[in-house]
Image (cartoon, rainbow, N blue to C red; front, side):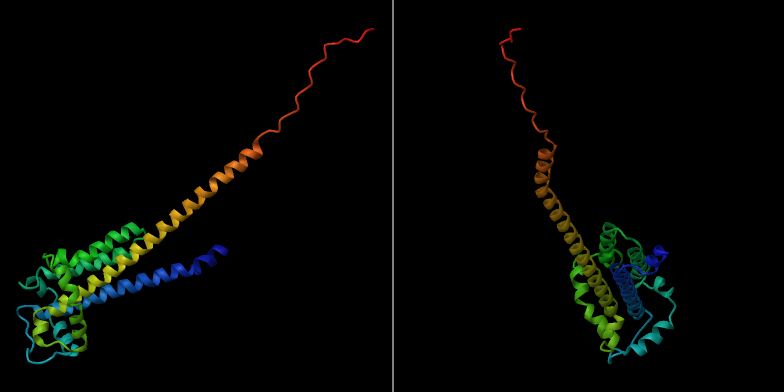
Length: 223
């Protein structure tokens, strides 16, 4: 009965970790969705009005009117669309694993995924995060047709993706650092107390010396 209660009421730390994982995966998938929305207008057969800002309420119907398979056949998006399935897979795998080392490896892959699957120049490692405000501008209607058509909103979504996973890596590094410091502190405390305990054990285990018997006298008693 007590085991069933413990399963139904997990510890607060475990609940917080589960909520954090769910929020991370939801944020990652929202950024992937925004990347897809920004990628459709960058196709060669797609065009927005360059002279005015395009609200998101106008972008979404135009995006959903196109088939996702068109991204595979368009010369401007055929390579960039590969990021979507890879990003979804990595984020799901990160939420499934529990080992910290595996999480660090997956977060590193996720951070570098835009460079491995979309852009191959190292300068994009700095350029894409700087473009993350453009993705926010696209959501609130501050981007014109040229910004959408040139793929800047999609690049901004990739920059936000990189910032998200960089924050995850920093959090994991701080957690590992704190765990190692706790282990080192515990080891130092044990080493400091170890001589005292051994001394006490030695002193308590040493036998009490027995009195030395007196030597027999050389004289004999006469009968």
